[in-house]
Length: 417
Image 1 (cartoon, rainbow, N blue to C red):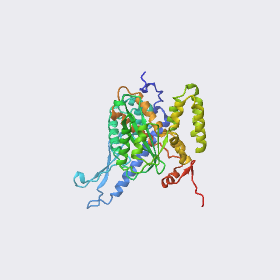
Image 2 (tube, rainbow, N blue to C red):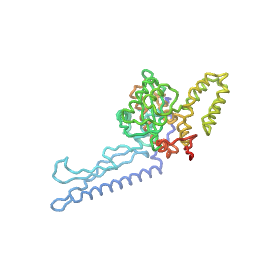
Image 3 (cartoon, helix red, strand yellow):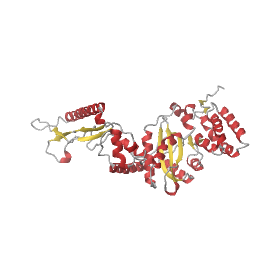
Image 4 (cartoon, helix red, strand yellow):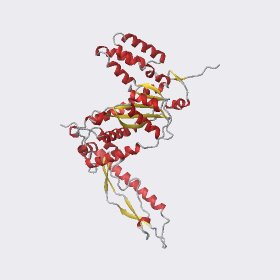
């Protein structure tokens, strides 16, 4: 059986056989009808002064529009929107019309279900299996959510991505930025990979800054990404940039935002060092490396660092050399608030988000086009961003911006003369 089909899913019982869900659906229908009724009453009252010479009101009810079904997270809910008539002898375009804000004329599915579509698509459900998947999840047929609907939505995603890439960044300030190159498990032209940048704002909130394609992780590709951000208004250099050991990013960063400090990702560095060690010693070496980046102070981290070098250099000089060459950048986080350490020691904000991209592309047969790969990655990240939480200790961001110094994660206090 195909992996990308929902036929293997254990389907829940149809909601029509679930009394509780049926009660919820009926209650939702009544509440919706009451809300729209309140809305139309308020509209008529607002235009109640419009009357003819005989005192008759000109803006009046005129029955209802044909019934339609709105697809929601608890199944389809039938609704009938009220209709209003302007009885004045005016041109059609001059007459007052009523459009419900709660129930727009062309609404066919709720926002929550709209967000479910990209979620399913990005997690491996093919367009042909959407009706089956939604029936299993929602418990009812969803005729408005066919494969053609998904194709139209994908076209809309492309337009959203293009507009997002041109957005103005003037006045923006990011204290931290995470950067990484995402290599997907699918064939792409010319060894392309996704270059991703996420920033932490002055309020401690994470935002997606860039999702672009590049040739491997070359300096030129990263330079184009960073220059594009700067040309759109992101003039102020971040205080700290977090990334792996890809030389392309760091060279470009030094050219475009030279004032930013550098923090190497400990997850990437640990993997690189362990790859140069025999499997028999990797477990112990991993524990020794953890003692470095988990040390309470920079002094203790330096001692643990030296201990690792002394223990492994005689037999494994390549592994030690891989670690030592980035010593200063690996310990840069000690100059920032301790509450932020778990956020800035690694590029996890990017890795955890884009792990799903790899899962989706692993199910994709053939070669992805550049536009499709970028659109998928952007849409997934945009959905994920809604669930990103603030960084711990976000009250310290204002202090970092003011230039307050931190030693071992604690704000430095100047001694009286």
